[in-house]
Length: 261
Image (cartoon, rainbow, N blue to C red; front, side, top):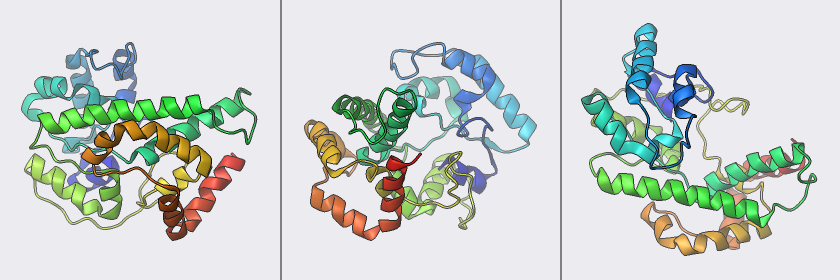
C-alpha cells in the first residue's frame, strides 16, 4: 500500500526492511528501546522527525511515506507532534488474513528451532496468541476511526480490489491532485517474489488445516462486534471451501508452504 502511494505522489519510502520508518537505524534505537505495542509508550519525536526529514530532503521527493505498524497505537501523539505536516489513511486486514500470516511465520521459526516437528499440528496456544494480537490492533484501529472521523479507512481487501481507492483517499486527505494509477510491477514484501497486487488471504489461510481454521474461528467468536465494525464476519467451513474454489492456485501455494519451506 505504501509503495502504491509513494509511486502516485512522488513520495519517499525508507529503504529499510519493509519500507518502514521505524527501521531507519537512528530511529530504531529510539523506538525499539520500549514496547512498541504498548499504547502507553510514547517517543521523543523530535529526533525521529529530524531523521525522517533529512532522508526526505536527500531523496528530493515531495512526501515522506511512513507505514510502521506500531504507529496505530499512538496516532494522537503523532498528530500532536507532526501537527499540520501529516496526513494519513487508516487500514486493517481481515483477521483470517493477518492471523494466519503471523502463525505461518511463527510456525516456521518454531520448526527451525526444533520446538515443533515439521507437519505437526499448530498449537492452539499459538493460534490464540496470534488472535489476541489482531484483536489488540483492531481495537486500536477502531479507536482511531472513531476519534478521527475525517481520516479515511481503506481496508487491505478494498485496496487489493481497487488500488485507486487508496490513492484517492490519500490525495483527498492531503489535498493534493490525484494521479491516475496504472498497474505496475512493485517490490512487495521482500522474498515473496510477488510483483503485482493481489489478495493473499487464501494463500495464508490454506496454510492452516480446516480443523485449525475452526479453532481460529472459535477464538474470534467473542469478538464478533469488532469484526462487524470493519465489515468482516466469521467464516464457516463452507465459506472457506467456496473461497478456495475461486482461488485454487493460491490455495495450493499456501498448502505447499506448510509442507516445504
